[in-house]
Image (cartoon, rainbow, N blue to C red; front, side, top):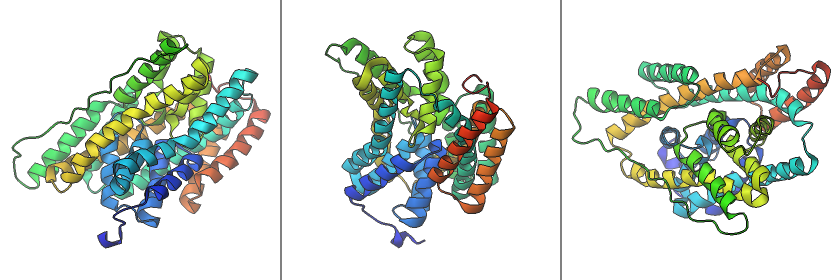
Length: 393
């Protein structure tokens, strides 16, 4: 694919239609969603080049907040400008928001979602397979030499050991990329290396009958979206500490169900915030929690995107991108290892994970087809085996 084949501008209506569809049908967490965007937007629609997509992933993985949404915002900015970024990003979020608000209403009115545990049992091993397969595809896209693989391995080990993604990993990895690709290979010393520091948004006063509670929800999720590096469920420890231990808004079982809803619904996994907000303060709680968790992503990407576009050809920028991209591969795979401890607990879940991975590699099945199949397997297998470890591990 030559650069001349790449679309220079995409209509905002086309961006909205694509991201509405991806938000409604995209399962598997950030790695799977990013890999789906790579297949759709690089290989099929040719809205972005391979290099632009790799830059998008590397820069967005280096920022706090949910990876898939940020990549969607970044690409929407590249092809639709400022308003395209806002329209494409919120279109990505909207279908999942509607689904999860509906599930929250059902949970509040009926007291429990009896099928959630069985569905989680079948689908979560397939999600692990999706993450592993997506890592493989993303590695093929942007991993070019042994140094990147060394960086990825180091970040994988650190993610598993620390049980979280650490912002410092991406900064260090990007700096290694600057030194090696921008300085050693070119044998030049830069004059100044500029560090970009994003200032978190200021939270205004929320008025109304539930103003204090809504304000606390907004503040909590703004903090989560601004300061937490976490692809998918790696953000869970931060949420658990704040929602269960510090505020007491949820008990442990409610929190586990909220995480399951975020993992099993399409779109970005951190839509867990929407479910939590509904449990705590109804519809308006779900709305302010959703805006809180995602708004920092829009602000951070729209600050960084114009700067990167202006300096894309700079060897130091390219070096940072290569280093940070390698860190993204390592941390996403590390997240898969952490999540497998929750998702895989017996012989059937091992079998589901292996069969899902085989189906992805052999037939490249669509994520919604895989999810539908594993839902059926989960419902039958849970009824037969009655595993006690689900939502307990």
